[in-house]
Image (cartoon, rainbow, N blue to C red; front, side):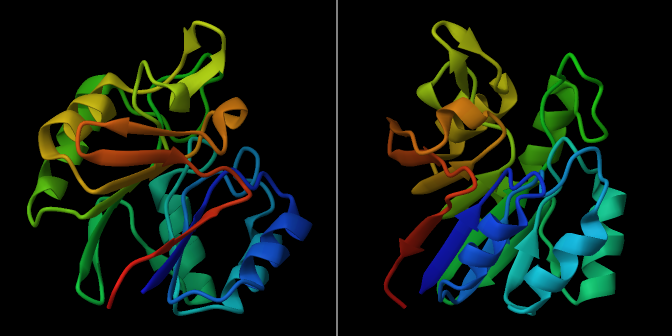
Length: 199
């Protein structure tokens, strides 16, 4: 089973086309495909080339309703607040971010983030994908000592311990990987990460 996860395209259509040229069984766009939800109509046809294998989360630059409508229009699958059975592997997804200084369309309070994450613990996800990284790790560090992730995401990972966690949101941390207990966690960025697991 090959799962390609990527995030924070921010309307870089060339980067998105390169991702869609890679072969995978499942593709997960983990949010922020555009800026301020503008231009989704130009992103859709590129993702549509891999439909129905494509699953989409809203970032903080899109809200859940916009992504639901976008997926319906282009034959894609919304993953926000849902489980996906990828062969014998259980994947769970949650979009949006914790509050930012910019009042973007897709932000949750920490309390709402925790409330939205809670149902994803059952069935136990082997793979958890969120737009927002866990607070206080290399994955959410935008500059030395400056962390902008979610405490609720961190708490959920610490408690549930999925085998894999993927996120985006903090561009400066793209490509970084850490271990949180039994969880291998990675900020995938727009370069993406191809996870290969046995069927």
